[in-house]
Image (cartoon, rainbow, N blue to C red; front, top):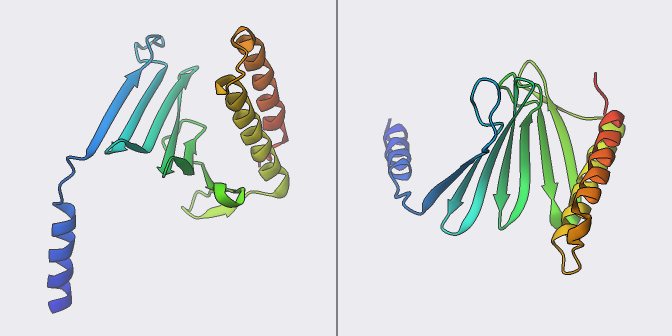
Length: 169
């Protein structure tokens, strides 16, 4: 009984802690779908000046896809995504940037997660490399501002090609 009481007090104290250092910034796309909703919605949550969570919702063809990016010390360490718009996260992607590691898991109907096969993991890694390379090039000191559209089209093709490699069981 004492343990329950002590645990309850600890939980209440933690829950009631000051969250004045937490700030949310919301952005909505100026473009809207046929129902009047923005086609893109982004929420960024900051602890002080450091971003710790970003949620991005994109609407395409009436399907709302959601991604949540969990960030520690400026690095994304976990991504959850709902690709089919059913409101449940389908994919978990874990990163260990220090060691260059990446793992991908698919959520099962029973709530458990299962690692993807090697072919699918390779496709995710290929997409990750393409995205990283694109932004390194576009935001780097030698960024070719006149080549953005051309580079973005090449990135789109690379991402689509890698998507075809993923196992769609």
